Image 1 (cartoon, protein in one colour):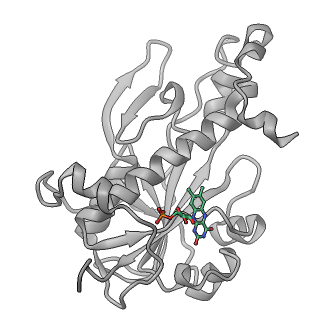
Image 2 (cartoon, protein in one colour):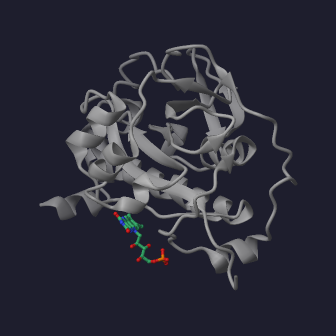
Length: 247
Ligand SMILES: Cc1cc2nc3c(=O)[nH]c(=O)nc-3n(C[C@H](O)[C@H](O)[C@H](O)COP(=O)(O)O)c2cc1C
């Protein structure tokens, strides 16, 4: 049954009336701020550079993190590499569409990037949401512990000993509004693109990461304060400094 998720499903759209075609207003690109925006430091494009060839050649899943903090500028670079907005397009019917560092089916961008910060210079530990339209962080009011993170990741201890965990949540309606029954596959594909950008970007920061598909859905959603229906965790990736190749 679940193999059906992998199939195209596109034919089903021929007999499907989407909320978009019904004239239902487009869902918002991002939620409202919970607190005051936390502005991220500027990162010049050449501050973090590695050749694309080297980044691809060196990319690997890293699970042994050094007890060293990440710098806020490095975190800002990683967030922008994953979810940074390249262009904002005003729609005739109202609202905006964003084009970002990672692609998304129909530019619907159903994924939000949350970060659980444990050890980042210049940012207090806690759970933050990256707000792409403002290029800033929003503190959620939650402070997950490393032990909570390890439990949420089914006992994978390197998740709790990282400097920061990227947590991708899905807001499925952003994609369902247009693509209805094929949305789940599209959202899962989008998540792969986001995480791959992180895998490549960490190569320019002396850090490493590892995709996490094995996590406890209920614990992870509860840790992030999500309702588990309109928004829930779909993917994670802990990030921390790693030993340089050859050292
Ligand atoms: C969708 C997905 C889910 C994954 N989930 C986990 C995970 O929960 N725990 C883990 O240690 N590695 C996880 N990985 C990493 C893979 O184990 C890893 O990519 C694979 O062993 C190949 O190693 P490499 O990434 O270094 O090439 C996941 C990778 C992907 C793409």
